Image (cartoon, rainbow, N blue to C red; front, side):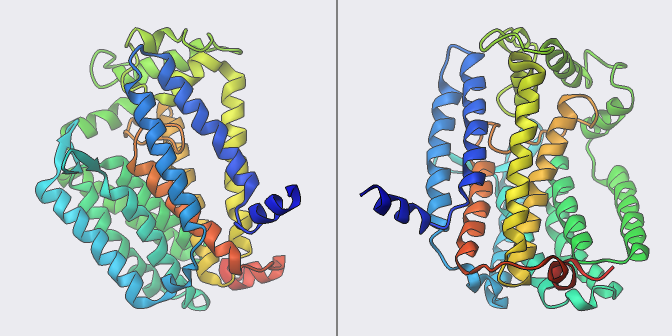
Length: 379
């Protein structure tokens, strides 16, 4: 009987190392939310989002996702994603000066989180058929146009953090597709021009203030630099072993704002200290390793590129969130995967991981030399 249950578990095609690495992060987020307030509102709702997200993960792992290689399917997803962003610009709910939420009967969603996943799919599709011609600059320009449309719709909300993640997904997938160094310099030059344009015509005053505060974070502690300063204080006060669960003074006394979302890493670090931070980094390292490992076994370039794009998506959120919590990057309001409160981001991440697990059913091992030639590109 025990062996029969074990066989059924194996047939799910789940990467259990990846799954088991995620669980402690989910628990850490819940424990941190429940420790800084007597009201269990965030804990209860986050627990609900986690149950739904895990259900999506296991459900999506059962499907055969080869239909995503079809041009019509990818085009439909892209149009739907851009339409959702356009509706957001026209009718979106404004929260903290950002128009990033659509509300339906009391339920709010962030379309941009799902658009990030769609961009990974469309870029994986595009580079799958053109990986041997990636040296041609036109493929960079065409893929850049596909990304520019949602990037612009997100930037004008203005959601600076998500716009940066969209750009990093494109840049990362361009790099793993085998772009030449010369063209890579052109990409960075284009990014600099785009930043200058955004600074002059798109960024709101508060976003410019955040960037300027990044350069001189202590010049406006009572204003734009307050959040970053309090976050650095919280992380530093955790020291080696932390203050203990429920004893994080920065969070409990409300010195640290948005400690359930934007600054949950700082709240966690204050309670768990340096050793807790090391554990978080270790778990995320395992997650990225397992995603890339599964990508290498993809049945085709599409599956491989999708997995790599998903790894870039998670790494971008993780790096930016940690950076803004320790004062190395501007405060952009990005959640950290698996730990921050919120449903849309959680759904998108687990949907992507579920798709990756579904691709495992028809995956095959690839030799190291084949990986470089097939989807990393020649040196």
